[in-house]
Amino acid sequence: MREKSACFSGHRILPIDEKTALEEKLNTEIERLAALGVQNFFIGGALGFDTLAARGVLRLQEWRSGIRLLLVFPCREQTCGWNKKDIEVYEAIKKQCDSYIYLQEKYSRDCMFIRNRYLVDNSSYCVCYLTQKRGGTFYTVRYAGRQGLQIINLAE
Image 1 (cartoon, rainbow, N blue to C red):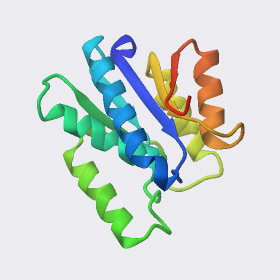
Image 2: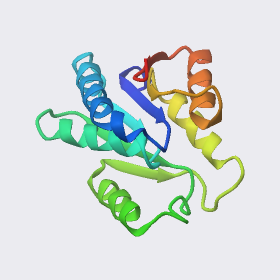
Image 3: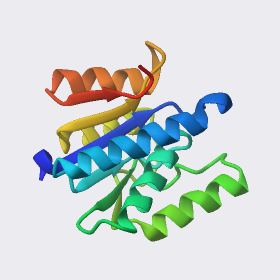
């Protein structure tokens, strides 16, 4: 399964003036990976880049069969502190995905890192939006590189 799988990692806060262009690049990359035989798209369900990626996979599913959106949540409490609109988008994506799992029941200091490692460990490609050399996305992309994944940084 890993050779036919890709994961996504990116910042939660995206520059508003770049969002449309980023979404277009992301959709093009999702289509390219599907054309290469990628069928499983693992996404962590966070705000920002993860939400754009999930919407892109759902769009592709409308016209291409065999594509699966697999959500990997760090814990059941992921949306604590989110606003109502973001929770509604999260729930709508969750209802449309092919499957989802919670890696932990409760939030812990390392639950996001556990989620990120799970995404990488089950993929051959890592599509990212990395603009900073710190934080969860930086950690995930660095880990993906060490695991031999092909890294596709849409910020470049």
